[in-house]
Structure formats: structure tokens, C-alpha cells
Amino acid sequence: MNDDKTSNQMWGGRFASGPAAIMQAINASISFDKKLYAEDIRGSIAHSEMLAERGIITKADQKKIAKGLKTILGEIESGKFEFSEKLEDIHMNVEARLAELIGPAAGRLHTARSRNDQVAVDFRLWVKNEFLRVAQALKDLIAAFLERAEEHAATVMPGFTHMQAAQPVTFGHHCMAYVEMFSRDLSRVRDAIERMDESPLGAAALAGTGFPVDRHMTAKALGFRDPTRNSLDSVSDRDFALEFLSVAAISGTHLSRLAEEIVIWSTPQFGFVKLSDSFSTGSSIMPQKKNPDAAELVRAKIGRINGNLVALLTVMKGLPLTYSKDMQEDKEAVFDAAETLDLMLAAMTGMVRDMTVDAAAMKRAAGAGYSTATDLADWLVRTLGLPFREAHHVTGRAVALAEQKKVGLEKLALADLKAIHPGITEDVFSVLSVQNSVKSRTSYGGTAPSEVKKQIRAWKKRLAKA
Ligand code: ARG
Image 1 (cartoon, protein in one colour):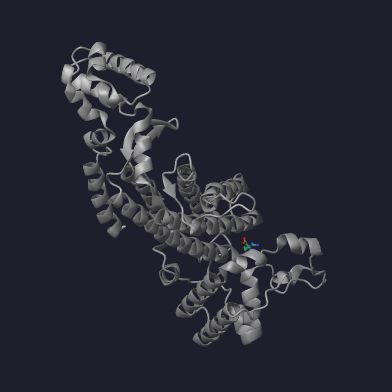
Image 2 (cartoon, rainbow, N blue to C red):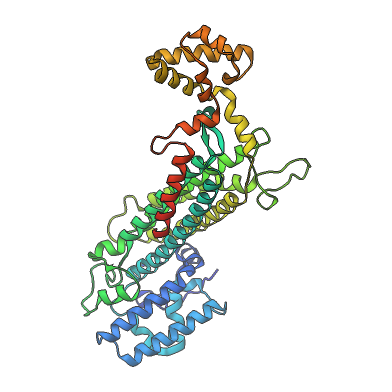
């Protein structure tokens, strides 16, 4: 740690001595904000071009500045750059090196700018780029699910409520439920980008600047739709970071639910799916075991994202306008959440593509637990005109009888069923099989294979445009 008593070369004009070592340690952000180096340099080049265009600095100085910044980019990317904690953050590390490289012209770069709008623009550029990566990763995951859904549009499995087998559904339908969830996540990403696609550069410290800057020019050069409209808001807003974390928390929640299902499905007791060796591990003591570690970790990692969301909400609450150093705490939360979400999405897409589905095990389970009882009740309503409540009661008696005889509903004798209700005919057996049960659920959004295939077709078209 540096206890050197010379004052800071960037802002030390009114300071007689340097910071205490502990002050430097709590103040410096370079250990994590160096991640923003490319955005910082890009922002500075755009700013310098605008300054030259508006006659605020000379074209000759701008050329030196841009050349120096590109040299620094190369130094950082090749690992040659020496980051210094004494220079606090990425902005001052880059500027100090620029001064070493090009001399006094470096001091003109910060005209009409403050670190407050500089960090805001750097971080927005980074978050926007990360949003775009997440969008692509979500599209890959959705595409993987659409393939599995197509393959298994007619594969029956039990549908659950309360984790109890409820009614038969198809595995394709179940996959499409996740397509719906991840597509909503994708649309949240798009919405969030739409809102944050504005450049805060030129807001300067907080009040704007008296220099004749062109904020539309820098916004355009950096790929933003518009400049922000209020200088105070520009330097104090971190909604875009909070939105990233919220979107990540919701999508991570979906991933975690799916991970839990994969853990359950891959138990020997269920045996619905098998993960290959590439997505499982063995036990060091129990040779028979194959553990779904990747799924378990996806299930768990949402904890970090939720923690990061709460951390930044807590940092931001109660902060008066405009910038306060508290806001430097925004970055680690977002970086960690982004890294975590990227990993969760990639691992899950891998597992969805990799897992082998045991259609026979799913079908066996689908038939267990009297899962077609609702179909029997519906048949009584449709065919005999019974009120649903009465049909429910009659069906309950049939289930009790089947339970007593230890057989499935479809294995009850017609005579036994007639004893429960004389109107029941042979035709009832057509609805008691799981296959026919799912086939009959043709309501819009229902589990009938014909309906599932329609939804797959519609999503494929939508995804091509998303
Ligand atoms: N490292 C700082 C941050 O991340 C940059 C902005 C510093 N601004 C200031 N007025 N001290 O927030």
C-alpha cells in the first residue's frame, strides 16, 4: 500500500499532502473499474473529436490525443499497462499515461467534461453491450428449447401441481413454457436497452458546460440514440444498472426453476432425463453416483444476482442528487451479476441440448396417480350431461375403487364403473389413456400436440425477427 505523501497529480492542487494509505484503499476503484478501459478510451476519443470539431481544442492536439489513447488501448490489451492505485480509477490512470505519452496536450482532453459524466457514459456503454450479449444468449437458449419441443411435441409426461402428478401433459409443452419465460426475459432486455440508450456525456460535473459542445455528435459517435435531457439526472441516474440487475434476477429465477426441475428429473426415482458425463460429476466415495452439479450450480447462482440487486438498490436509496462517491459501488455488483448470468445461460443451454429424454419413463409416470381423473369427469359432463360437481363426485368414487383394487382407472371393469354410475359406457375408455388425454386438450395454449406444434411454428417465426 502506498503511503507516499505527495498529493494527487490529477486533483491535488489544493491538497498539501497525499491521502492516508487507508483512504487510498477505500477510495480507489481501479482494481475493478479497469474493466471499463475500452469504453473509457472510446468515450474519450469521441469527446476529443467533438471538442476539435467545435473549435474548443485544436485539430493538432486532438490528433495527438487520439493517437495516444490508441497506444494506451494497445498497452492495456497486451498486458503492458501498469495500473496504479494511487491514480484511483480507470479515468485517471488513462489520462496520466496520456500525459506521459503526449505531454501537455493531454491536459486538454478533460475540457468540458467531468469524471461524473465520464463514468456514467463508460458504464452505460458497458451495460448496453452486456445487455446485447444476454439477448443473444437468451436467443440461443430459446432456440435449444424449440428444438427439444419439436422433438417431443407428443411425448407424454405428468404435469404437476403441488409437485403431485395432476394431469398428463407433453414434454414439448413443458419446454414451450420455458420458451415463454425466456422470451419475456428477452423482451425485458430490449425494453431496458430502449430506455438506457442515451448518452450522458456533456452533462459535465452536474450542471452542463459553458463550452459550445455538441452532445448530439458524441451521442451518435458512441452509438446512443440521443443525448440525455437533464444534466443533473445524467450524472446521478443508475437506473440502467438497476434494470440490468432486475432483468438478470428475473431471468436467473427462471433458470433456477428450470435447474431444479432438471435436478428432480435426473434422479433415479424420476429418471425422466439423463445428463451426459459432460454435465455431471461423480462422487469420490460412492461409485454409483452421477450428480447434476451444473444444474445445482445454476440453481444456486441466482443467490449472487439477487444479492447484487439488493446491494445496489440499497446503495442508491436515499442518495441526494447528484453524484456521490457511494455510486462507485455500482460496478462490482453489475460485473459480478453479468458474469454469473452469462455462465448460467451458457450452462443451461448446454444442458438443454445435452440431456437425453426417457420418453418411456415419462409415459409410465404420466399414467400413474390417476392422472386422467379429470378426463373421466369431463366425459361424464359431456356425454351424460352431469353437472361438473356431480361428475367430480362420481369420479372420486371411481378413483377410490381403483385405489382399492390397486389398478389404474383404465383397468377398471365396465361393470364396476356402471355400478358407480349406470350411464357409463364402453366409450369412456377412449379418454382414460394419457395419450388421448393430451390429444383432447386443444384449447388455445393447451397441451395437445397439435396445439404445441402451432406454438412452436409461431415462436420460430417470432424468434427470427427478435
Ligand atoms: N471512480 C469514480 C466512480 O466510479 C469516478 C467518478 C468520480 N467522480 C468524483 N466526483 N469523484 O464513481
